[in-house]
Length: 356
Image 1 (cartoon, rainbow, N blue to C red):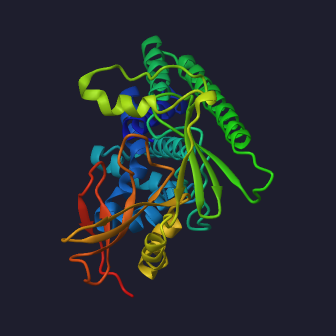
Image 2: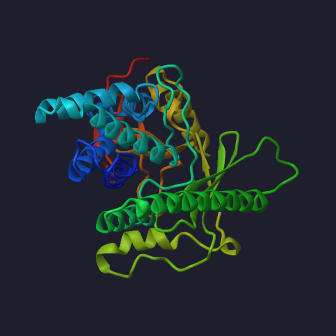
C-alpha cells in the first residue's frame, strides 16, 4: 500500500485505540500513529543496496513481522520519549506505535505482494490479493472517518469508518471470487489439466482485475472490468497513457486473452532464455516471481539482453514493471545481471557480476 495511506491508517488506529484522557495529546497520538504506520517501509533502504534481493527476500519481511512488532514498537516508543524527554508516556507511545505498525501489516496483507507476518519463525508470505497497492476509495474512507471523528470530538466515527473499511475489503473479496469464476469459465477446456487461475487487483476501479490462467510455463492473460463501466480516467492530454491503461479493462463479454510464456515461443529465443532463467545468480527472481514470463529480448550492436517479468505487476499500455535479466555488453561478452528502471524502456542498471 502507498505510504500516505499507511500513515493515515496508522493515525486512525492510534486515535481509535488509545484513551482520550491519556498522557499523550490527540495531536501526539496522531503523529506517532502516522510515523509508526509508515515505519515498516523503512526496509526500502534494502532496495538501494540490492534491488533484486530486496524484492525477493527483504521487502515486507522483518519490519512487517507480527513476531518482531513489539521490538519495533519499543524502538519507536523509546525514540519518541527520548526526543520529548517524557518517559512517563512510554506506555502510550508503545501502544500507539504497535497500533500503527499493525495497521501497516494488515493493509499490506490485502495486496498481492505477500507479507512475512511470522518472520523469522517462517518465511511464509500472506497475500489476500483483494486490494491494489493504491486504492483511492480505501484512502478516502480513512480520511473521511478520521476527519469526522476529530471534528466531532468523539471516536464513534472512527469506529464506523473501520467497520466500513472491513465491508469494503470484504466486497473486494467477493469481486475477486467473481473474477476467478469468469476466468475459469472463459478458459474451460476438458483437454487441459492442472490449470491454475488467478485474479490480481488492478488500479482505477475495484471492478478491475487481471486474470491469469496458468498451464505449466504458458499463460493466458486478460483484463476485466466486472461492472463494465467506462474508464474513470478523464480524457486529459497529460493522462493519455493512464487513460489507455484504464480502457484496457473491458466487460466480461468483451474479454481479449493474450498469450504469454516463460521462455518465449521461437526455438532460438527459448534456447537463449532457458539457461539464463536457471542461472544461480537469478535465484532471487525465481523466488520472487509468482507468474514469471519473458518480457522481451533486446539485441543490437551495443548489447544483447534477455528480460523477465512477473505478470502480477504489469499494467496494460505501460512497460512491464519488474524487469530483471541478463545482458552481454557488448554482444559476446560474459552475461551480467541487470534490471530495467521503472517506467523506462532502456534504463539499464547493472546489479552484480553474474557467475556461471
